[in-house]
Image (cartoon, rainbow over all chains, first blue to last red; front, side, top):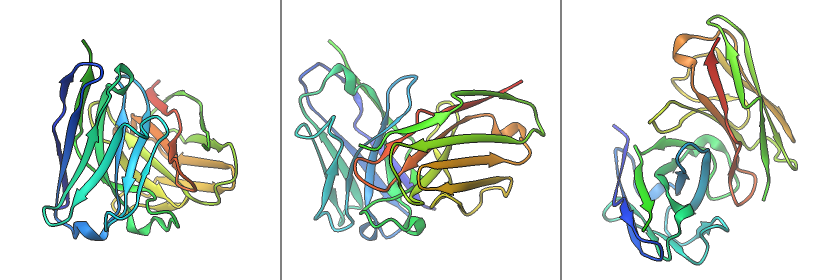
Length: 125
Length: 107
């Protein structure tokens, strides 16, 4: 079964750091670009960052550029999101998501066909 | 960034109704558009990709159409399991962006 399982969320003070992980199973992890998408409480979806299958290319939303770093370890089938200088507006459920091979995008990522269950990040003093 | 605008933001409908949700892009995105369904406390589920391609396992009552800047998601006969929030997403350019969502409620 294809599955993504996030971990690492929690409560952190403004200015603090947190590292999220996403363990993948059931597919050839290194063959697919991966993304992080977040959803603030009661709000819509916001794409955060993406990484190519090899890890050689990364992409970020302007709202997190310079503060967040996406990475992956293909030997461990795991995706990461290092979040530094956290702000109250970063409070959200963070989902990892797998790129849909058939979405046909010329970008590194297109549509997302598999999502994790999400991990909650709360930034508050 | 490309802005995605969905309408309506809320829709009240009955079981059996035909439902249409619109998504407009601030500039042309060709057919690089996906639709998702999300239920409370759950992750989004992919319904449609490349504007009109039905994801495997998704009921055929869901369909997508459009290209350029205007797109629609249609549910041909609303079922009890379809009451949820629906989002469009463009993948024509970075940053990838989502519409604000359309909540389909029971009338």
